[in-house]
Image 1 (cartoon, rainbow, N blue to C red):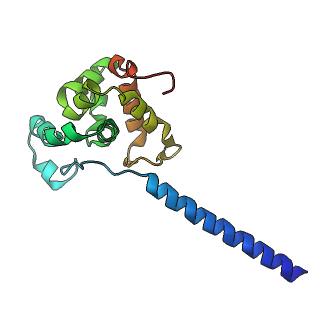
Image 2: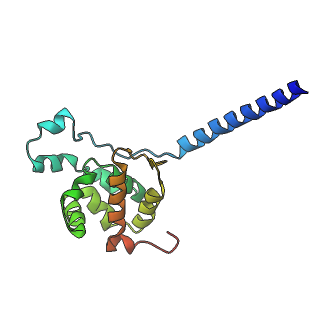
Image 3: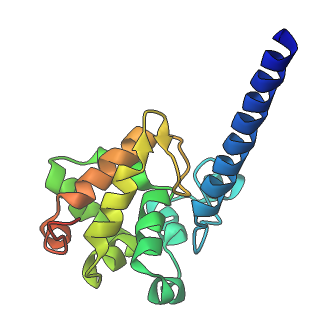
Length: 168
């Protein structure tokens, strides 16, 4: 009888392991890839060789051809993933923070200017956060709480709010 019980427990453990592996495989398939990655980032040798803020801001701009072909989801992910996402924290009051980002970074302008479904995609990013950061989105979790605040700042803008529906 004991032997039969051990076999049953072993089968149960194997089932749980297989189920967990299957769930991980499904989760991995849900993760999308960024349409473009920023080749120069703060902390790199190339970034450190830039002498002025103007040079750094120019280096971080997304090529116009990438912005033109990007979907709203891709633009939202780029906006949350771009290396100077925390730049807004140097300004106050809150609306000035957003205005500086909008004025200086083309990915933020692209996201806010011509997208009817931007609110839906920002809400999806917001909902993706857990206790340890972003769970499924291809967003680096370094400084994730600042990135989450940035998403909230975006979501609070009238041009974003106007794109949302009750189902969002």
